[in-house]
Image (cartoon, helix red, strand yellow):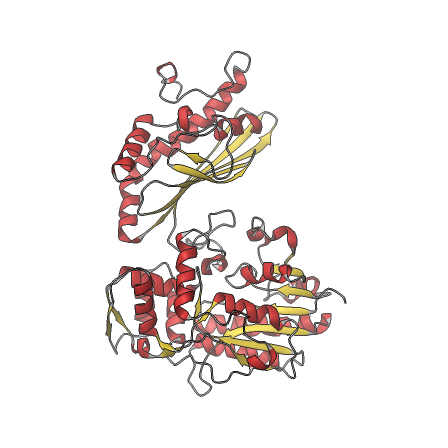
Length: 511
């Protein structure tokens, strides 16, 4: 039997980024469509799929991507202003239909939103419903799966619940907090999507999918609080709190942008409960059964706490959005991100510069303000952290997972990239990252980034309180690393291969 060929649109998004590798796992030949293929360069499954450049708003860019494809997964949804995104989604759906017809696609699978049939839908759900109708009426066999609130680490719906509940022991909400919701775990959504590729499809139509629980949205937050070890939240319902005001409030309290927050809130203004269970006739539930809401929350929290967030709602943010994570960034679940970035060229080849970068920490020091680093390590120990006492296992070479003072090596691409994850006590999560580039004969460039994801108000206060010292610590670090590499090049015949120890009296003027 010929290998089924699948095209995944929205591959940089929350669902698409998880679906692609799972289709590979079941043996499908997978192609993914992205407006910016560079965003997929560092995903673990990049080498297992074909990456095609294309934009649903540009019909000419779709022909090559849709050629020789059996199943197209439509997982794109715009989140701009109401009129703008509804028109964009209509055009995108029509372009997909045209490309699928021209290329002989045999099936389209679309993930839409769960909603009452008779309700006056929000623009967000109205647009999704319209896209589903366009696909169903295309003449191409189409399965539209309609899901409600998706629970998983990094999903926009879960992140909104998590941040609101974590940060607000008392919260004001619109009336929709009493509406009935049928949430579904992301693992179950992926189960249905994978099986949809070859499930029997008597005719094109919509299918409701949901988890085993039907609960009120307010109770979803209370259950989250219980599982997260928080006290019961007090929820005050304000009838005058409009979606626009609520969206602005969510944008202030959580990392969810106001436009996305408003769209999510508007989608919750009616009950979101499956009206039929016909999906059971063509796609049986997972062998272990559908995931209960409590278990879905536990799994999402466990993955969040362990940094095991496979994809995030922010992965599909618009280009240049402040919250947009680069594909090379540490995985994160949608938090606000602060960065301190510096770059500098030096008169040393890339190999020499890399040797200095890889030898950082431990006895070699941190190439900037040794007293400040020592004080920071001491303070960390005072509050129960690991401090600087661990040093490093090998003074010249690092491996993934190695402890390095109060950091740990999260990723190393020897010769080009070193990323450290902080294990000090912080009101948030922090990384240090260096990238080495060859820029010409005997010259190289070092890109350095400090990355911080604050946790609550304390995290933001922490970042701004240390901001005045960044110019001394981080800029000085960059200057001293590149300077050390340049000196090694000039004095390679007389200098030790070991970089100067930061803080040594003999090097105090050099470093």
